[in-house]
Image (cartoon, rainbow, N blue to C red; front, side):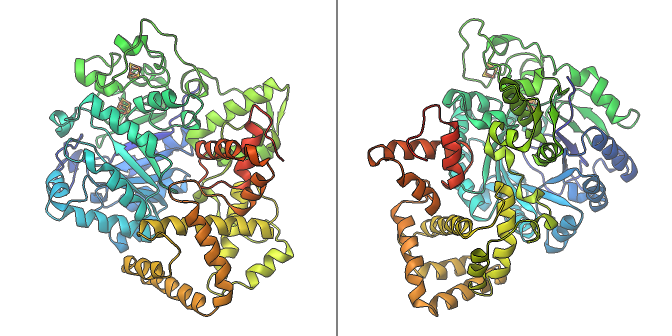
Length: 607
Ligand code: SF4
Ligand code: SF4
C-alpha cells in the first residue's frame, strides 16, 4: 500500500513570546534556538518535497510561535501556491488586522489559537503572560475578519474541564469553524501536567461525541484522542464520522512532524527521529525510514494488542512511549478492557489506514475523478474505497458521477468544502436560473441581492443542484431563517421579536459593517409591514418547532413528510432526522429526506 502524508505539522521555530506551562516543545524566549532553525530556502525546498508526495496535504505551521519567524509570509505563500492547505497554529498574540491580512494574502486557509479558559486570570496563568487572553482573542477576531477560517483549541486540564462546554459555545458564537480539544501527552513542559484521570478523559470525549451536532457550522474535534473512534463505534458502528480522518492516530501512516532543526518524527509528541531534512530528502524519509514505516504494520502489545478496536483506535503511541518506553505498548489512559484476544474490527476506515491498495481496478470518468479531487484529501481515499466497493458489488466497471452519488459513504463527502468552491465556479453563467427565481431575487431589497446571487450558485454546486429554482431559493432561505432563530434563542428570545436586532447590533460593536447590515434589515422590515407578516409567521413556526434544540425542517422537506400516512409520520420523522444528523445536515432538507429514503433498508412509506 502507498502511504501519503495527509498532514505535516512543522514546528518552524522554538522561539515564543509566551511561556505556556504545557508546551511540548519547551519553547521560550525570542532568541532561543534561532541559530539552529532551518533557513527559508531549506524550508521551501522541503515544502516542495511534501507537495511532491501529496499536493493537497495540510501543512500545519506552528512553533514555538510561528509568527516569530520574519519569513512566515514567504513560507506560507510558497506552500499555498503549490496547492498545500496552509494552517497556522499560533498563540494569536501577534495577529493584528495588518498581519492577518498579510497571512490571508499569503494563502493561509486557517488559524488555530489556543484558548484554555475564558477567565483571564486562568488563561494568563496557564500561558505565563498577563493579558494573553485578550491578545489571543483579538488575534482570533482579526484573522476571522481577514477572511481566514478560525479554530479555537483548548487543552483540557483539571482546572478548565468544567468550562469546556462554555468555551465551545463561545467559539461557536465568534464564528469558529472548528473547536479542537487537544489532549496532553506527557512530554516537554507538560510532562507533569496530564492531571486529568482516564475517567475524566473518557467523560470529555463522551461530551464531544454528544455535542458534535450541537453547533451548526462548527465541528468539535478531539485531537490525539484515538479512543474517540472507539466511543463513536460503541455509540453507533455505522456513524459516518468513523469514515473520516478525525481523532484516530495517523502518526507515521499519514502524518508526521518536522522540528525547528529539521528532524522528522512520527508526531509532535514523539522524539524518535526518522531522519533529518538537512541531509536527506523528505520523500526518502517518508517512504523509506523505519522510524515511520514501523507504524504502518504495527504489532501492538498489552491490551491494545488484544483489543477489537486496535485498528480503529490503536491507542496513542506517544503516550505508550512516554509511559513505559515502548511505542507499541498499551495506552494507559484507556478505560476499555478487552475480553481475551478480540477479533479486530475492520471497516473502510481501517482499510484506508492500513490495508487497501491505492491501485484501482475500476475505470473512473473524468467528471467523477474531478469530483473525487475536490473532496478533502483526508477523506478522499475513504470515499474512493467506499465507492469502488459498492460499484464492484453491483458489477459496475466504470465509476461515473451517478455511481459516486449512490455509493459515497456519506453525502457530505460529495460536497466540496465552501473554501474549495473557486470564485469563478460561483458565477451565474455556470448554473442556470429559472425565470421566476430570478424575478424573486429582483424583488428582494437591493442590499441583499448581490449576496443572494453569489450564494445560490455556491449552494447549488455544493448540493449537486443543476438549476436554481424558486423552490431552491425557498429551501436556502428557510435554512438561513432557522440559523437566525437559533441565534435569537441564544440571545435569550423565545419568540420572533424585533428587539433581537438591537441585541444583535449591540453584540456586533466591533463590526461596523455588520451593524450597518442590521440597520438596513430593520429599516427594510419597518417599511413593509404587510409583507413581514408571512416572515414573522415563519419565524414563529421555527420557534414553535424548537429549532435550536431540535432539528429544523425546510418547507420542501416538510411537504415531503406530509405525503407519508399520518399515523406513520412520527416514525418517519425520527428516521429522517437521525439520518440528517448522522450525515452532517444542519437542517432537514429535501436532500436529507431523499438520502434517508435511498438508504433506508425498509421501503419508506411515501415518495
Ligand atoms: S501518537 Fe498520540 S500524540 Fe502522536 S499523533 Fe498519535 S495520538 Fe497524537
Ligand atoms: S485498548 Fe488500546 S486499542 Fe483498545 S480502545 Fe483502548 S487504547 Fe484503543
